[in-house]
Length: 54
Image: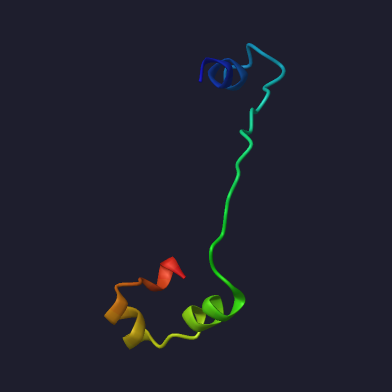
């Protein structure tokens, strides 16, 4: 955070972002994703899935 503050305050000319390496494992398939995306609003409500979650 201090590096960012110094960059914003123009005390430093460079700021290096460190992006951690992520390993994501999926356990779904295309058929399941399509089924979820094609749910009606009533079906989403029944399962407690907000529209913004999709």
